[in-house]
Image (cartoon, rainbow, N blue to C red; front, side, top):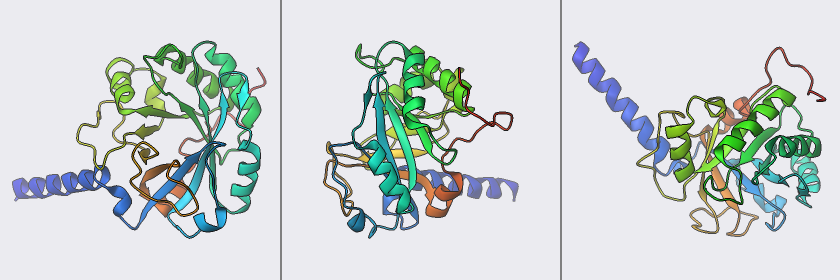
Amino acid sequence: MRTAALFLASLFTTAAMAAEFDHPWKTPETAMVIDAYCENEIDWKLLATEPRVVGVIHKATTGARKVDPKYRSRRLEAKQLGYLWGSYHLGLAGHPERQADYYIKTVQPEPNELIALDLESLKSKKFMNASEAIRFIKRVKQRLGRYPVVYANFRDTAIITEKFRNTEFANTPLWYANFKDSIRNFPTDLWPSYALWQFSCEILNQYAIPGTKPDIDVNVFNGSVEDLKAKWPLTRRSPQSTHPSCE
């Protein structure tokens, strides 16, 4: 009897993981989020016809000097319409603490707003590497009392899992970029799963979102709309920290 029960439990676990990593956007209950920057067009009225899209994550800053020109207006529009709101910082090489300070100063995130670090390529000299990312994450935690979400593609996720699993990355939810129908080789040693999976973009447009063009990035949340609303912004302030640091 015990053996049979274990076998059935294993089957259920396998089935759950299969649904999680195999076309989850086809499940009617699954929540979705778009992420955008200034060159993406958004028709908010048409976007509202897709009830599973309940969140927007918008590019805010790049490096320590650049701000997306549409960030503030889009933030106001989205929040007035009831969307969950988030921002991300595109990390460049060098001065990660300065970049974190610039991001925080620009965004001034409210407790219910998602914050994220976009790691485009850990091996590129142009973008932030893993060691710099750790310093950025530490600085954000010091200033805001919570960790950012980390955006990484499948190659960088594997690198972080292999070489940096015992660092601050262990405290960050994963925003996973992999433009495939299903994932067969997700590295689970650090992150048991993704929080968000960016599965569709201009490279591989797998899912059309009303009110947007094919160049919009589309993400699936690992859970239902109600789950996402309950868990947003995916990281929360530490109980002992009530105000952002002014350092």
